Amino acid sequence: MERLDKNPNFEVGTPYAQTLRHRTVTQNNRYLGSYLVFHFLIVTVYVSQNMAMEDSFVKVITHFPVDLSEYAPALDTVTEFFYVLAGYGWAWYHAAGQLTIIVFLRFAITEFRVFLHSLATLDEQIHDRLLLKLDGNEERVVRELLYKHARQHSRLIVMVMHLRAILRIYSLVHFSFYMIIMAAFMARVLVIPGSSSLGMAIPVMVTVVFCFETFGLCMLVEKLVQLNRRVSINLYGFSWTQYLQYGHSIKRTIMLMIMQANNTKDFSAGGLTTVSAELFAKTCRLVYTMMMGMANLASKGA
Image (cartoon, rainbow, N blue to C red; front, side):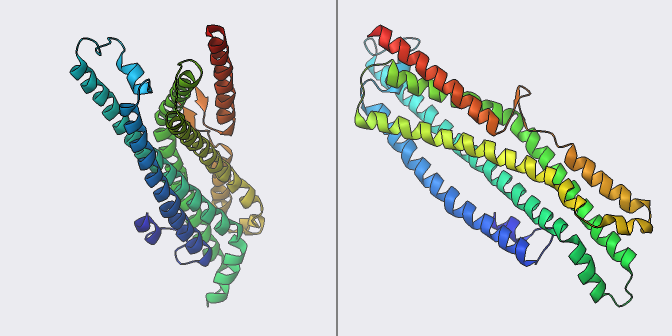
């Protein structure tokens, strides 16, 4: 993260860009580092609790498909350890993947904000550049600055395309595991009898953390899409009509940037739905429906 902060390729040295990039790196190191420590503690305590306590979730799934506790207790313990180790490894794999995705999205959002700020001040940049040029060649200054922003916008579009390709499968798997974890937790609380304070507190924390991760992913993706669509709004505020006298290439470049911004595609979750705040709201409603259904089953069983 520090290497990316020190080697940007657009608006290098400007106060706004430097402050925004530095703040993003600082927040990533602070909050995401704290999250890793918290995640390590939660997973470690959760694994220990599942191995030590009776009627824990690991104890329940260990007896599927064959219950070995009566025939081979040692093998049953090995099976429990295997389940716990697999869950521990998956938890760290998920945490590393989730943090990587979040960091990528935050850096992309930062670069878009730097680009939009520079685009909003394009008239001032042209004016300041003309004051420094002895020949006062306005056409050359306009072309240099406009093409510079067009190239940066193209790089940002390519970056968004790469993120969209990464999140196409990852987001589908993430939401699938999110629903599985929520269903397993609610089954443990509402259907399977027996619990303790620690046995309830840890699953609740795990579920809450996963819920916040999903919420953050949806909001970051939606923010990135909205920032790309704002490019056309900032371009409309640019006094580009007074520079059309310098040729059709000026108009063509501006129209191309506007078209790329207006034709922004949403991030797809496996081609089934789009990743957005609306998707998170839909999953919350689905979780509520599942909770009511399991509570109904538990009341009938009692």
